[in-house]
Length: 144
Image 1 (cartoon, rainbow, N blue to C red):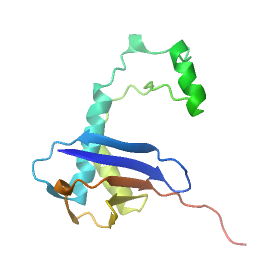
Image 2 (image 1 turned 90 degrees about the vertical axis):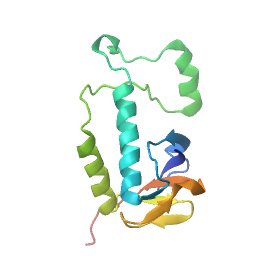
Image 3 (image 1 turned 180 degrees about the vertical axis):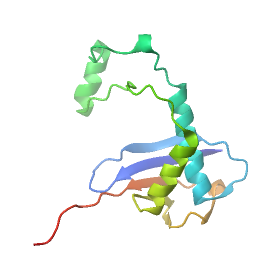
Image 4 (image 1 turned 30 degrees about the horizontal axis):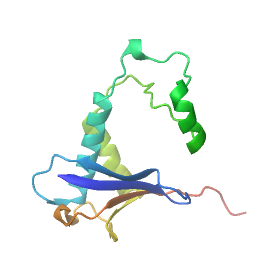
């Protein structure tokens, strides 16, 4: 099933991830928030494992290619897409971490205009609403 996701952060003008369509391995369109988060984490872990990070492909000098320089100057951000961590991701641990972060309020999930507040909340993916993850930023400090 194809869903559209975007990732935003409070205080930022542009989203971290703009409306990306991903295919999830879900048969039933009515799922819980927990199943949605676990499915998206599973999809992202599969993408990470499928990406090439062979040791002979490792970039030793970390310089961008010539055709990549115009993109860097247009966006103003250097992101080379290289993976420097060669460890495999433990899927159950990654799913557990994502669920714990949701429970702790580190990010909010919206399905269309509706906020998903609990892990047991049912959503119907056949409505084809956009799913938005908002990374919440907490201020640190104290009052004197």
